[in-house]
Each structure stands twice: as structure tokens, then as C-alpha cells.
Image (tube, rainbow, N blue to C red; front, side, top):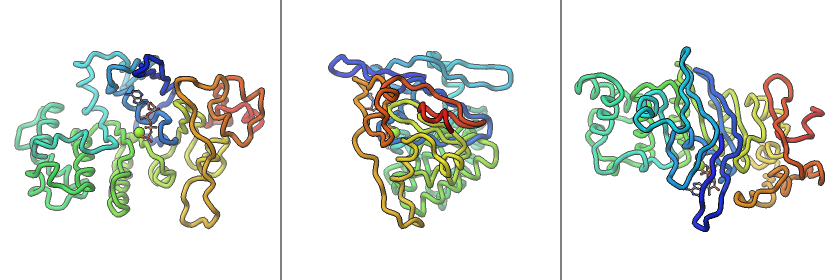
Length: 315
Ligand code: ATP
Ligand code: MG
């Protein structure tokens, strides 16, 4: 998958470049990377939710049984059978997904009745159950409220309820816990773990490797819109291979570990004028000059890992 944006100065900004990821039914994948690495843009691209100035290249397929649906370029009408129904979404900003002027009850039941054949009474019952499932107390009363009448944490949970009410096969959660306090964060993570254990596939976009470890089996590390490393999560945390993954781990806050944080020096590259070789080279502690200045391929390391760094051949 690739995504270019046309900027105001009529330049081409490449936000996502040759990203290949896959999630199996019931799988759980974390997508991690610094701010601006293309996490949200790639998720929005496969859901057909990017603005007009974006061009999506490549392919994203939804496979079910023997059928395979190409999502890139899928007409809006056909997307309605997948987005919201097969794939539920939770975005960074809860207020983007909930309409502030419509009570929760109407938003949830209309969403549900749009995606599955059920009566108004059944829809209301399922909506109340969904609110209860995400830990909203007194869901019968709260379902009558408007989003603005709820606290931030409660709104975030209502948005997750909205994503789950139609029982999707895959949930894409983009930083679902950044705006909430740690107690609510724990509740939301437990909810997602529970969901995963019941067979829903989960893609979790997060800055927080602790969050990723709690929930996910696999991880994809993005940098400047490219996959730098993809691996089993435990494997990547215990033995990161790409210097960027190592840098991310060194800059992650671990309360059990007294060693000081080592933030990665420098800044991400300009996505309009990308470095010709490895995008991470200007910041890399292992920069080797010439070989790193050449474009880097993803290299398979072992059975379950790919790394975009020529040094990983030795691993
Ligand atoms: P964060 O962790 O801050 O959410 P992210 O990894 O989700 O970061 P994206 O939102 O995917 O980052 O953005 C990737 C790049 O695409 C950024 O450089 C951003 O400026 C650019 N971008 C996103 N939306 C647009 C747009 N509508 N027009 C132009 N550029 C955009
Ligand atoms: Mg984002």
C-alpha cells in the first residue's frame, strides 16, 4: 500500500510507501512508530477514508472464505458492506466518530440497523449491552445522553461500543487509549483482550510498547511510512534487530527499569524530499555511509521476521 498527498505547494508528499501487512482471523497486530510515521494514514487508506488530496496506490484485500475484495478504489456503496460491519474502527479523536448533536441511542441503533437486520427493540437491547460491555455504568440511562454530556473517557468507550456493536471480524483501533486516564486505559485494554480472545482480529495503532505487549502477538514498526521491522511482538521486544526498533525501545518509558531514557536524536525525514537510501540513516547510530545510502529492501530474518536494514543479513 502506498499513499501520496498533494500539498498546498503542489508538491508530492509520500506518507506511506510499500507497506505490506496482514492480519489473520483472530490475530492481533500492533503498529508502532513515532508521530508522523504514517500509522493513521495507512489505516485510513485501507478503509477508504482519506481526504481528496490523497492518492492511494497498491492493494488492500479483505479475504473471507474463498472471496477476496479489493478495497483500494472500492466504490463507496460497496464499502458500506465492509466498513463498520466487517471492520470496526476506533479513531484517535472520539468526537470525530460520534455526532455531538445526536443522542447515543440513535447513533448506536441506526448504525446497527444499517448493518444488520434487526428490529428497533432488538437494536436498542444490543446497543445497551454494548455500552455495558465497554464498562459504561448505567447504560440504560446513559444511552439517552448526547456525547457532550459524557466525560472524555466515557465518550471514548462509547466510540468503542459503536465500533463493536455490529460485531465486526476486525477492529482497527488507532490510539484508543491516549486521551484517557490509566484506570480507563486498563479497562479498555482488558475489553480489547477479551474481544481478541473471542476471535475478533485486532489492529492496534500505538506509541506505547507496553500497550502493544499487553494485547498483541505481532508488531509492525513504521518509520517515515515504511515498514522497518515486522516480527512477533515478544521477539521484537526481547531482541530488536533494526536500529530504529532498538531506538524506540530505548526511548520507551519502563517504570520497572531504572536506566535513563535514550530518546532517538534528530528528526524524521522530510516526506516531500525523502533520503534516497535508508530513511533512518540520518539518525542511525550504526550509519555505515555508502551501504546505508542505497535503498534498503525488507530482508527475511528467521521464520517470522522481516527487517529493512542490510546489516540484518548477518542476524
Ligand atoms: P501520530 O502518532 O501523530 O498519530 P501517525 O503515524 O498516525 O502520527 P499520520 O497521521 O499517518 O501519522 O501522518 C503521516 C504523514 O502524512 C504526516 O507527515 C502527515 O503530515 C501527512 N499527512 C496526513 N494527512 C495529510 C493530509 N491530509 N495532507 C497532507 N499530508 C498529510
Ligand atoms: Mg495517528
